[in-house]
Amino acid sequence: QVQLVESGGGLVQPGGSLRLSCAASGFTFSGYTMSWYRQAPGKERELVAAISSAGGSTGYADSAKGRFTISRDNVKNTVYLQMNSLKPEDTAIYYCNAKRYYTNYWGQGTQVTVSS
Image 1 (cartoon, rainbow, N blue to C red):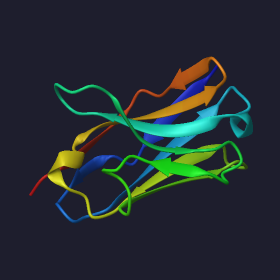
Image 2: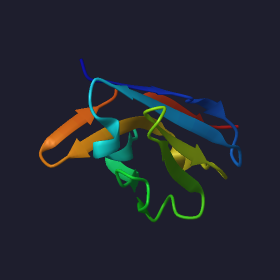
Image 3: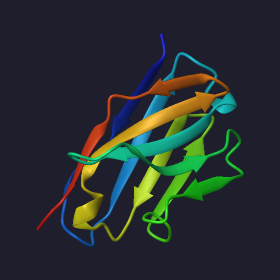
């Protein structure tokens, strides 16, 4: 059974940091590109960051560049998103995604709220 379980979300003040984790099971994690997406109320889901299967290549949305860092541990089958200098506009549900060719898996999401 495929599972992607996100954790680490919560309420943080502007300028603060959070580290999201996504624990994967039920598939060959090291063979998949892993990504973080987010969806704010009333908006479409958007790609935040992605990392290649071996971790050698990463990409970021413009809104995340310089503030967020995606990483993965193929032994622990976990992908991370370190988020620094958080802004109110980062408030959203953050989703973990695993993709390989035409196969896509999604987690249930974790809420991140940036507010004073």
